Image (tube, rainbow, N blue to C red; front, side):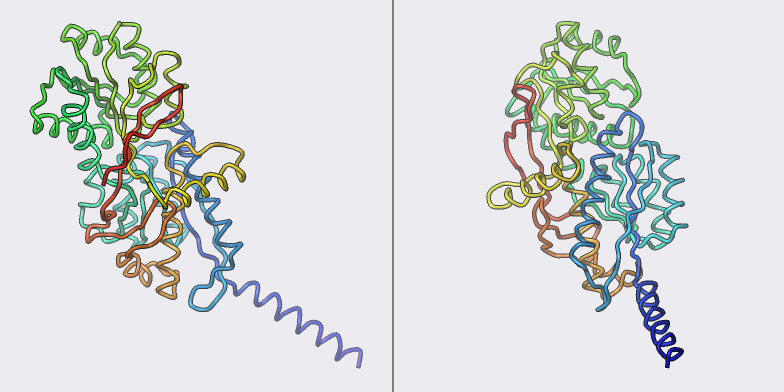
Amino acid sequence: MQMKMKLTVLATMAAAFGSVSAQEVVKIGHVGPVSGQSAHLGKDMENAARLAVEELNAKGVKIGGKAVKFELVAEDDVGDPKQATAVAQKLVDSKVNGVIGHLQSGASIPASKIYSDAGIPQISPASTNPKYTRQGYKTAFRVVADDVHLGGTLGRYAVNQLKGKNIAVIDDRTAYGQGVANEFEKAVKAAGGHLIGHEFTSDKATDFMAILTTFKAKKPDVVFFGGMDSVGGPMLKQMKSLGINAKFMGGDGVCTAELPKLAGEAMADGQVVCAEAGGVEGAQKKAADDFTLRYQKRFNDDVKLYAPYVYDAVNVMVDAMVRAGSSKPSQYLPELAKTQGYAGVMGPISFDEKGDIKNGALTLYTYKGGKRDAIAVIR
């Protein structure tokens, strides 16, 4: 009798352990620059991915009728194209079920081939260079508007609203910076604006005096910078030291909560006009605000920029898995491509045939009292 009880207990324990071991683990890869100049943005992204995974596990999401456990596999690409391809291969070798990332277009574009070759879906929450989704890869998606929309809108705004007479352009030669600057320049020309020059720096530069001195002689009233806030902030300081009081414009790379800190006291109220790829208005604002509160509570920090898009990217990927009844990339990829009207915290998500978000929004901002102040949401 005692032996039979022992066997029964052992059988029960084995069954319990068997059910635990049988639970499917779904690996969600995340890549962003969590070291280097853009580490504050990369950490913002990684935090949001972690929050999304934690909430999905708390809900007890089932795929194909079975409970699954989501696991975040986070990597650091330092915003560098070579490192991006190295960590992309690492994620492929780790057999992740999908990837959220990268931040910079210069990282997303080369990494996208590796994911494509492996058949692993990739959703970028931040990369805006049009090339990213125009390479013919069925695995590449993004949840923000691209540079054609972003740079074009800023270019028209510089001419039509800011009445810029002498417009200067600087870019950091990255895929992102060059892409958004080129689209800005095209739109300025199409709107009848006058360009006084296009100069180049790098994403690691700290000295812009030679470039700015060249422009100063041409009396710029608008300076557009294609690049990130870590370069844009010091550039604003040097503009002030040279007495250049032009409007400063840029894409989402400079349109961050950190820009006023990076620029110090060099940034005047209303001087900066920038655009973030994305944006909400009306009833949608509550969902975005609720996300911000959850993020602040979990990480005791403010959202920097891309966090809500990362959160949406994780959830729309998992939604495709649920609809497909499978977390296997080959099984859920077709469902991801067919996504229509998914209710994200930053608005509805639908993908077109290239993997771009349909009817993507962007938000124009300026800064007042060191805080971002929305001008308008444009679709």
